[in-house]
Length: 424
Ligand code: BGC
Image 1: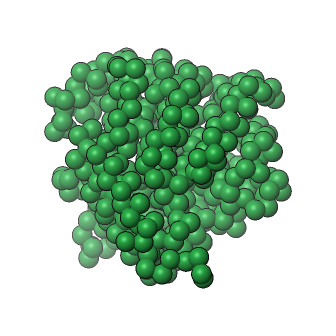
Image 2: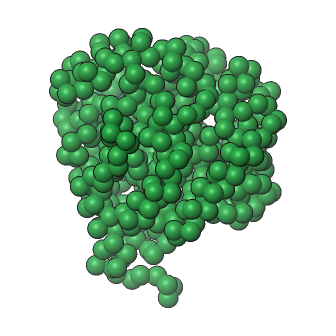
């Protein structure tokens, strides 16, 4: 008890962090996504024009949306080479934790062949975080995979899980002793849906059977990965980061709206966690949305406020989500991602401020909340929408030497963390 800070709801070891993913920032990655980007950049430029032209910020984003280069991750934001300087910025922002991805295709470019130089790269990467007193939170799988693995059918084939597990074992043996937390999978719900149900992402299948299979195989992959990692280091805290929405009924007294809300809450938010509930030490949640559902399982959200991507914003929705997860699982909770696409930096401070209030409220009601990782540290490659959406606490100017500029909201966030740490 003595180390606890009585006047501050957030305890001294609360993880104040930011998140990234290898493919979105590193640059120079060669995986199934980078191949797909090059094949589809032109098509995406055309389709996104049609999809996004009704956004209020259309005039501002138009030239980027219409440019095929926008859809190619290419040099990334050169985080692969600039990680030390980026970690100095993490430190300057008063963050004490950092969530990052390990790029599978770098470590195992050919099946069963480990690239020692890349293995060493991530050793150095983790050491540089530790040197600065920043807790590394390693994320194993954030959607990108080596081409040899997806050529074999990826997670759509149960017999392929073993290859993923070989990678997991390698990660555990190499880095497991340096870490407290490992996230095995990022948003299996989003990946399975976009890649196998809507056909938006590679491999662009629209097949409900493949969707179910992939979703199911990812639960298996996680459970096995959990066992392997625990056998290597029993102290590791292991979980996933699922995308969780604050799902509400559009008309709360309408029985159909209520039914579809209940179904969506279960299916989208909780189904995966339920499958792995004996194989997770914490519940990792990525929060971006409050969604209002009508009886036909259709979203009908208010039209304002929206972020640059047109997503309706209700940061306070974090509170009900935390509370529901706590009541359901009674396990420590980590907000593994949360943020806004906001190139003018008009909403980010408000988003974080409201998130802090939601978290304070949950903690004061007894929830064991361990950390908040803002998405993202840096402006990054936003998958099928490319470079124009700006999620970074730190702006990156890719046209001018990858120049980093700390956004005003990030300065505010860092001051706020300092105050919270000082018990004000
Ligand atoms: C993903 C990130 C992505 C963010 C914003 C999350 O679903 O994990 O990779 O950049 O949302 O779209």
